[in-house]
Amino acid sequence: DAGVTQSPTHLIKTRGQQVTLRCSPKSGHDTVSWYQQALGQGPQFIFQYYEEEERQRGNFPDRFSGHQFPNYSSELNVNALLLGDSALYLCASLGTSANEQFFGPGTRLTVL
Amino acid sequence: GEDVEQSLFLSVREGDSSVINCTYTDSSSTYLYWYKQEPGAGLQLLTYIFSNMDMKQDQRLTVLLNKKDKHLSLRIADTQTGDSAIYFCAESYGGYQKVTFGTGTKLQVIP
Image 1 (cartoon, each protein chain N blue to C red):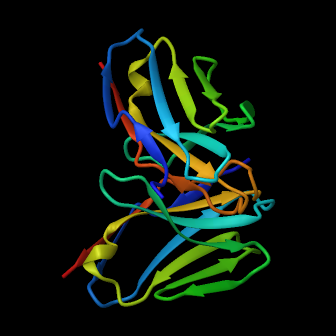
Image 2 (image 1 turned 180 degrees about the horizontal axis):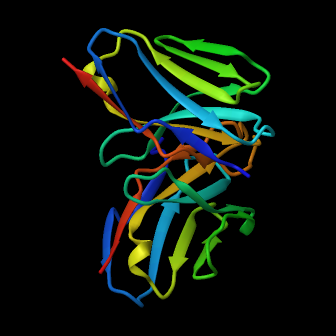
């Protein structure tokens, strides 16, 4: 079992650009959550996808959007990037035992 | 609202016990978690406790919950250098609800 995988590992963008981050959940998991972790902070919940729909959303602007595919993998899209979007973006997957989220290694996004 | 607070730093000697503390504000929280994050890595779930429990023990880890004071602690017995990491306290209503994290406590283990 490969666990939760994310790509790319690192990404550098400039202000105003758009970015797409990808996540494959743990085998058998159908729910994906995305978190943003700024340097020195705890992760902040962005949104959660289940059955290809956004089920919950945190306090993030509409510039942050997502998608879930039939195979349960997910994308996080961020438009009009700001310097403050620089962070580690973590994907977590949940299965039927919803008590445990399994996190991927994250994508480090740097906005210049 | 939801808020989770932790002290920023803890330093212990190898072989001693470590106690990491956390306070939370949301009395509706059903699940309380401890995660570990090593440099450059994602989050690893160490353990979790239901809000109707007072204590949970798992090998070297002991979690204590004081629901009245909204205080959670993680005790690591016989702390090893491999335990050096950032530890996050977190809460949720449970199930598929979002998880709210604290700012993390950096544990430094001195050989």
